[in-house]
Length: 188
Image (cartoon, rainbow, N blue to C red):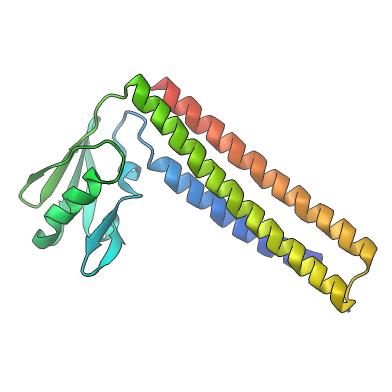
């Protein structure tokens, strides 16, 4: 009984979509000059014996175009939140006011724009690697089916081409997302 190529493609598409969603979240964390709650999304806080996303220990607000605030819910975590933001590599210098952490968003310098573009490139390459890993898993599934005799050599070749086409589509989407982000970084 031949296996279903559509089921394999759907699984691979779902996994590649996950990699692309992760890339978009990482891009949201790259600062482009305006304050945005997504800027602090990649920040992880050491809290209660483990690392947690900042959104699980406080509320992020944008009171002004160049200012973020984090209302920390637990007073004992204020210094941990401040330290996590400072050490996040985003180039931000938070200050504390009771349970409120103020995070001024400075203007981007040309040097900082280059750093952000390089970081975007690293994120995109990580996503490409993830997509290629999913492709490898798909190819392994197809080869396994061929070894078991469920599909023939010709079908294996056709299916492999389909998986490669799917991979190429996702790599194009990653490249487009990177180009958009680099354009956004240059414009601000």
